Image 1: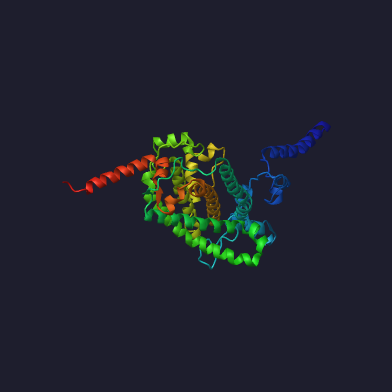
Image 2: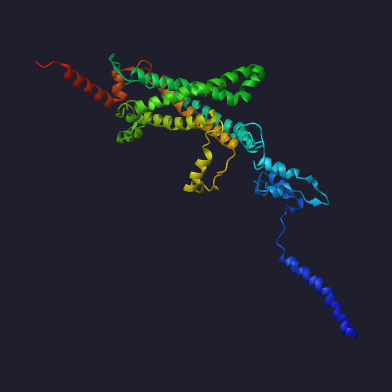
Length: 405
């Protein structure tokens, strides 16, 4: 064998394995950066979390199937026995573990759900903070308005003649709704702010019976609120249909900011109509979420709602990703509680303005719901068209009851 042939053979033997290795590397897809950690978070994940960045957790919440429960085998047993503990805890965390429980109560098979920490952070953070600012802001605004505008009084002396403004049954429905709302508002605030505002003042032992009693009142007075809401809706919905008169009322601010300005209005002016529809819409919403909380895990609302919002493309209008439509039972309850509280804060802020106008803000306004009757001068200035209709009806009834000669 010549020297040149020997060199050629040796070259082939050396380059063939090298070429095969290069080809194999070219065909091998990029490896998962988490492969070396067995599916755990990488250093970059940890650093991103420390920087406050959002981490895509799909590499964990999808790794919960049967394959994830099997550790790599080494001879007779796997490295951690026959089941990987991290995979088991991931399955429990994302509610994907196969469990057998003795309790038959709703959601009893949910052993762990880490969305509870998000709910807790929202409840103790933005909800409590911004809700408190909204309430204090409304109180401050009304105080400044009273200082600048003063109490709104009639431009002419009261006549002493009374006209019926609201019947007894209308006043009953109003006060049933108003009284129950105040109780619900106070007890709800106690539950939300008790830990940060009440316990430091009176201690845990004194607060405990207050919290328990407040919870009982909140749960049971809710039925009176819903009944009152139905009553006032039935009584007044026909009087609160918007019309062109409302635009004139809004254009001059209802005379709230200027003396001697009295835009015409029927039984309810534009400002009262805004309050009415706010009460109806917010009242229905807060009642729905309240019923979901009163009957845990039985009346889920948010998964179906999110699905409809996604179908309409509404999240995209705000640059958001589609909303999550597969919710655990506890997530439904947590969302219901957050929504209930958010609506309650907006509701209370609006009602504070309503209480102000109906009491110290306007002379004679409280008589309408307190006694059911108002002075004719007050009616002429604030609800002139309603007074005209009332007098026309009285004249017609009087003429009809007068016997013909």
